[in-house]
Image 1 (cartoon, rainbow, N blue to C red):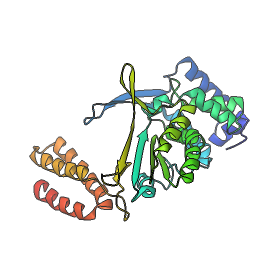
Image 2 (cartoon, one colour):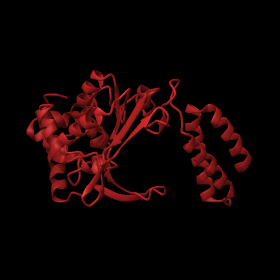
Image 3 (cartoon, helix red, strand yellow):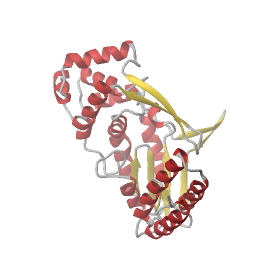
Image 4 (spheres, helix red, strand yellow):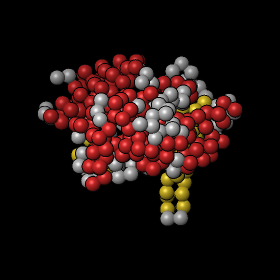
Length: 309
């Protein structure tokens, strides 16, 4: 990825022309919403609203090519797992199995807080991109000065931004103290005998790219948004319990949630809502079977008994 200074070279990698890229950038400058459509989604459990910005077909195609032919060529740190081919929440959890202490933290409102000028400066300083190429790439992958949720490039841009600034920097300290560190997009995890010092290291590294880990609790008070869990309690990393050295598992709370969902689905009258609930349960059982096969078999029998069609 280093050394791409020509807009013509950039356009060639995307199967288009430099003039067309400049024209799209001008369109977005004149009317930033001209190539996007919008919708919002409410999480029924938490009540949080997520705003999605979906590119139009032409921009979507270009962003996919940027992801595959440009950003996807960057060598990411071993700590990166989210949005990386061959990696998953499972591989992200594996390094933390059977550790004395597990710490997890994340960035509040991550995608909206990744600023366009930080991305542009990173492309220029760390990867030697030409001024125009850095401008075009940033303009085509950001909206309202941030990473749009719904764009195929947002996670890739985030990984490129954080792999040196955060992953590599924290990994050096983690190795020094005999700890493990991983990152799944904006979720960071540390583990070991005493990995607490990595919280401050991560906070400083994230601050360097204008990303906070603090959650505001009151007007003049803030509280760190991280969780420290000893071995005596369920330790979760990207939704998987890692206390046991034999492998990650699904927490009892989530298994109980599946059982409750089965009971609720059985009480619904025949129709679209019941069909959707049953399909959701089937998907959750498939996921459970990978990590807790015994529990999956028991819940499958309960599911068949209550919800057999």
